[in-house]
Length: 118
Image (cartoon, rainbow, N blue to C red; front, top):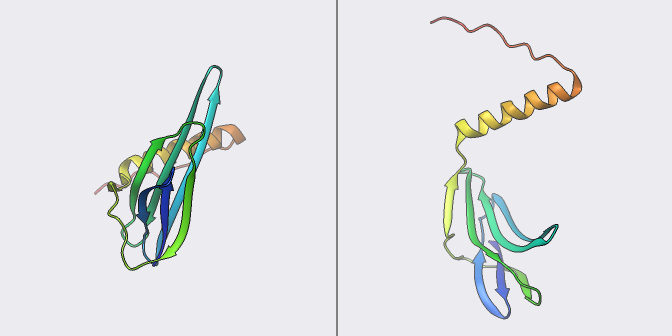
């Protein structure tokens, strides 16, 4: 499988992979706000068949850190530190909030069908 071999300052952090069907990401981010700022790094993914999210590594960085990501082919990868499914009820609530906010923004009216009695 395709995988990411990830190093930080010359030290191996992880080998991450999701198989044939999924999403694998590495993200380096900087957020500056007023006097505070953050540097972060994450290796994560999504196992598409099971709809499970995975996190191999999530950590803070400092100026001067050197990150290496090599794309490799391998038969085995490290086990993620965390593997979880998105909570479907929470996801649905968030989607409804988003749709209602967009409807309000564009002046649309949402019409829902009446509840059917059992």
